Image (cartoon, rainbow, N blue to C red; front, side, top):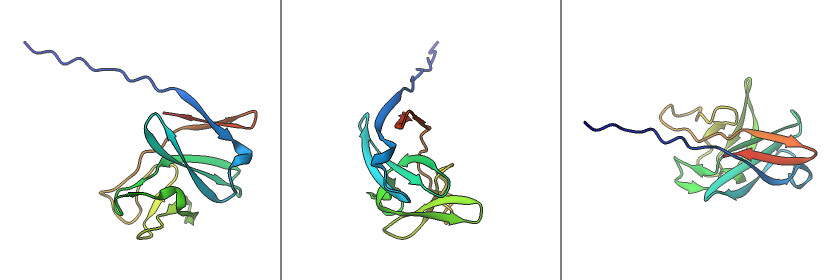
Length: 117
C-alpha cells in the first residue's frame, strides 16, 4: 500500500526593505528564497502589497514595473507588457480567469517591510 505523506512547507517572514525605500504608487522587485516578488506601496491606501513578479500572459518578470491603480473597488497593477490588470489582494487577472499570480502576506513593523513566503 502506497501512502502519500503531505509535506508541510513552513512559511517564514522575511525582512525585505524599509517602507521609506518604497516609492509611492510604484513597485520594486525583490528576490526572496529564489522567487521574484513585486512589492507595491499605495500611498492612497497607505498599504503595501506583494505579488509574484512573473506576468503569466507576457511570460516575463515585469509586474514590478507596472502601474498601480484601481478598477472599481479593486486595487490593481497593470502589466507593462499587454496591460492586463492583476488584483493586488487576490492575484486574479481581471481580463482572464485562466491566469493569476501568487499573493504574499505583508506586514510593516517599525517602518520595516516583511513578506511571508
